Image 1 (cartoon, rainbow over the protein chains, first blue to last red):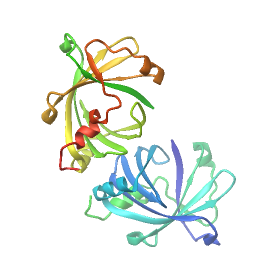
Image 2 (image 1 turned 30 degrees about the vertical axis):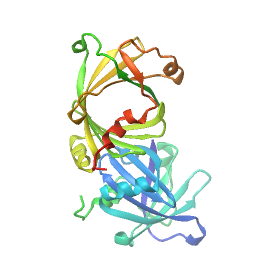
Image 3 (image 1 turned 135 degrees about the horizontal axis):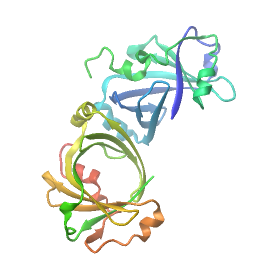
Image 4 (image 1 turned 90 degrees about the vertical axis):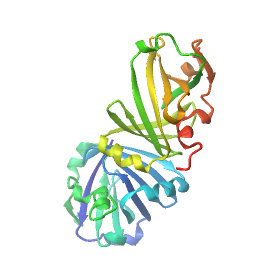
Length: 152
Length: 152
């Protein structure tokens, strides 16, 4: 089970360029359950997710570039592209800061994954975080992929 | 992890009509990793499978009929249709006997799922079983779906 919270960002953290980052490209074959393909650096991953906002079941299987390219034309809506920065928050938690590009240029979001629901609920965001959008489906990547496009 | 063996069938067991059975329809969006949609009675299931013949990782998520119908046109190759009979073998094991229809009419196979690799290896098939095709990819449904078709 994955437990995570999502936030909009008030301002970028200082020295962003000092943190490790990589490009992510992802697209969806289905909304509910979520069926997603993702390229992350040179890794290609097939993911299924069921249910829930804060907590949900998520299964991942690595795949070849060939499989990724076979599935890409079967996706719906937009292909999402973003640069992900990995920013350590404390000894347990890492902030994933996503800076979107392409048709979603301008959007910046942060995600934090927690070891338990209790940890998720007691999390105190850093001052550069903005609104908590964990339970707002508009800020889920799958919603953004399908929103305002004809490729449904 | 799923551990299973597959067999061809020499002859049908007696009184087949006494065992519970249901129709299965399934098709594939990708070969490796396997990405499958299945309708089984009124249940719709999305499945991902990775690797191996005897043992492999398998993840399943239930979906709606609407999701199934959204994914069906994205599938490759043949749609596989079969009637599955559930035949108790002993207190632990159930034989799944599949009688194929449509373009694979005439094919009959049995699958047995085991709690451990040890159980799988020590299994003594009933006399109506034929060749063990566990490690023959030609008898995997995914191979049959893709074989001899242009919809690849």
